[in-house]
Image (cartoon, rainbow over all chains, first blue to last red; front, side, top):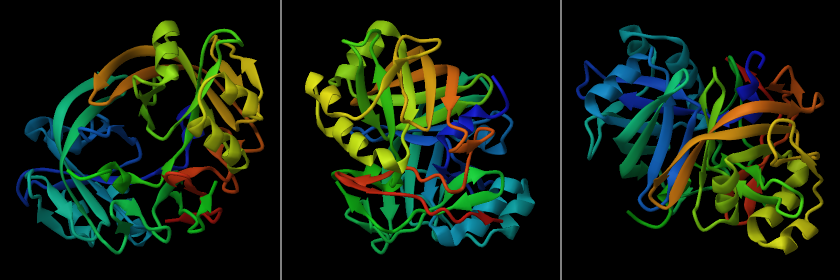
Length: 174
Length: 174
């Protein structure tokens, strides 16, 4: 199996994952490997490499937040995915605020934030898959109409490396 | 928790999942809840509701294929997601061909096909999460350049219900 066949499923949405339980501990990473698992109850799955600092924090606290960046946060997404350590947070133009039901922070500039508690996790190959129960959600009414994205919401899709693209805003009804 | 908060993660890519081990048994469904789990080995996760016919076939044979539709397959994706039973396959303008390493079929018109063997599965809420090991991949060199999507590849993103949109083909390098 050659280099990166997982790219056959790309472009994929990019999300931000926050962790930590107080401001000095807060961290943020980017994640393309995020999906929905169940509607009722609302569960998500996030795949995180064990060498990430986020991995340690999520293991420690059993909590994380999935923040949904609009296209305007592309610079922040790129920096969050390419820098590491405390320098990262200083560089980012993101405002971290306490979650409502978890201690991991929500990101004010994101169009939505999903507060998650880890239900369970398991290592598969080079990543650990975390199943999170979404215990609280926040979203911007400018971006969503009753939880459904407005057609003009521009989100971030990751192509590969430092290459990103967005969605069209023309909706086709079939 | 109100109606469909999982839509906060939308728009999401839509894929086709095939199952069955001989032509009369073949089936296909659409799935938005698909992600990568691990790079080496290459594992994917797919969430399938137990009431789906595909669920029974994947449980029975322990195999499935993730087929990646380009935007030109929008009609087929919609029909695969809204029809059911044998009538579905007759309506679809899709060509099913035997997989190389699994008995579930690959779709000739898809830009890529990932042949998967179920590593394990577990019920979470209203869906079962299948972890699949990708044992063989096919892709069109017109759509991908060494596994990376060409920027002009137009894929299908699901917004909600019968509403879909595509990606822009302008790539931003950061």
